[in-house]
Image (tube, rainbow over all chains, first blue to last red; front, side, top):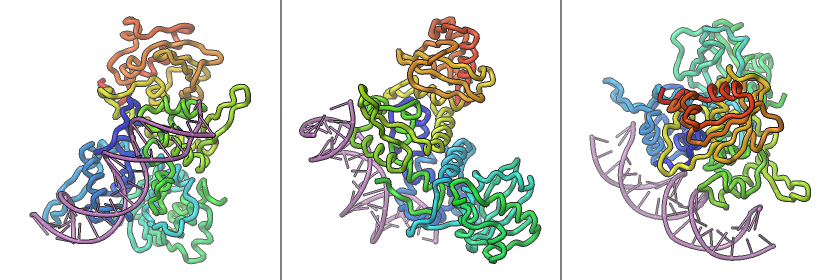
Length: 218
Length: 218
DNA sequence: CGGAATCCTCTTCGATACTG
DNA sequence: CAGTATCGAAGAGGATTCCG
């Protein structure tokens, strides 16, 4: 059960819904698409099974998350964000945008995952250089996700793209180095830390929109 | 000490900074201006002294809050948001905006304070009707605060205005009823639940911008 | 294998009392 | 007024077990 503040205040109400430890990170994971319990465990290193189960139960009760059983032959249960959670996305976006400026260097014990950085970039990057309607496939440390450009926004999703304009391959550290200005696009490409396929120009536009964000060392 | 997630992720980083219980509510209180420890205790019903002291210490260490001793003869210590906390404001705004839509009716044990509702309104209300550069003084349940309109945004502050265009007096419940569409401007005025002084037309514009927001019963 | 339930230890919270 | 000290209660974290 979520703890309450007993204050008739919008901020307090929001915190009662998603303010507990791990809750917003669960939402972060679900932002990229439906996930099974085990996937969430894997995507949230450090969480314990009982806490995750508890948070999912809370979110489900609040109507933010729905538990659905996939049709056969998969027949496994997945959790996904409901339509009521659209407002939650803007909270997550604000957190990611501010957190991006406070990110700094990875600490010794930090787990590094490409998706997390992509999420931060997606909300932070102003994408005037990226052409609306394009889709990019990202291969980060072997994992595949794709990003759609819609109305000047970058929307990340898990898995491969149906039809991508370009494929960009790099590792999570390179992505973070780009984002925070520790590496520039030309340097990354010439050093072979980033490789592209398909429309190389478009890929370069995407990388440029990713690089040198506020909070970086520029 | 704030607990950490050990994830190199912007959202996780933000949560390490302000994700603990009460932390964002402390920031909410400081948003309206500098406050003494005792003021904060009064503005955060339910918090205990040790938790508040701990949160202030954390925020100070993160550089979000500064502790300052007022010049004589006041000579009391106040806490205030630093310039580094500007990014934090957008997080608070996102929370308030979403929380406003989730607010609903006050629960039996809810404390009701006008400032909290004003804060929610300030970030939620689209203020096309309110004239830029105007200032309003609000008297809510005897407490005085003022709102400045700048670039289409409403900025609330504690205390009286230096030079206000209008004064609006009401109680917190009326304000919430207006915001959530349980009451309209005409009804509130004619029932005497709201009284205005100064530029009545401007006051009406302000009230209109406050009324019938998303999440209401309209 | 997926996920829920149980048990145990540790930290944090919350409330009251106390001190400079 | 501005906190610190103390202590019981609650929650987090980890491991293990049980159920489908």
